[in-house]
Length: 195
Length: 199
Image (cartoon, rainbow over all chains, first blue to last red):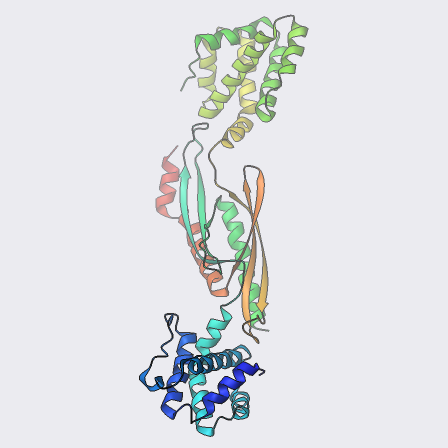
């Protein structure tokens, strides 16, 4: 794991029990995790009474450093020994390292999910709805008498900008073709997962 | 159901009695060609010169014939109804037979042309798919994230559009299940009864 000077110095301050008492450390650590994982945490709660006597600039520095460290660890799927070694180099004592790693272990899966969901992708299909109709006539042509399907693919944009759904009509044969091709894709997925 | 022809229409068609059956056949061919590709006034002028009448008369004759054919095709009237509708014009036996033949020969094609005029949504053309596995991104390394990328080809009013979409394995299975249910609907008793009874 390689982190910047700014992050390293922040972590070193965090390691210092002169600046951060054990309870202050615990609170800051938990706050750092919460601010990353909790979508509602717009305002980071750095105004906990235990942290009151610490200079706000220092608090922000250490909080940012801790959050960056957590993100880097998550990004590289770092194991316990990698994290421990890095924190040791930042002068963390055994106990604080243990605490960090326990907290990290607890939140690792959520962190990975969040990191994995960041990124661009083509319009993502989330659902499908369909309608079956029986056409009887149009103003230009009577007695048409044929079934038709209207299919709508519900689609999500990765930037969560809403995107109009993709709708199209098709005959029964066309729908069979569509479903057949999707089934081919599913079969090949299954085969690939067994390799 | 009989076709009801207006006086003006009957008058226009009246011209057909003054020419021989080969010409009527030719007019029929022109009428269908115009339905396929649009009208071409130059044809009227050429025919007018050959037959020594004004091009207006030719135009009315062809248009009258076109209307006869399209109305009949639109309503899908039976042979007998078509014959009875044409009887009213007082044409010769031979001309009536010719008109009926014209109608029957071209009905299917005319109906398919008329079908294109209906309001339409983009319609399915075809689909291509590709299996991808995401291995890493800027924000997370060492991933194994399978995805299916789909290229959906749609037709709208003659233009082909393409949409690129992606989905995950679970959603893919869900889509297949839902659409198979959709296909199954046509086979239910309810739908079968409707198809049988609406004629």
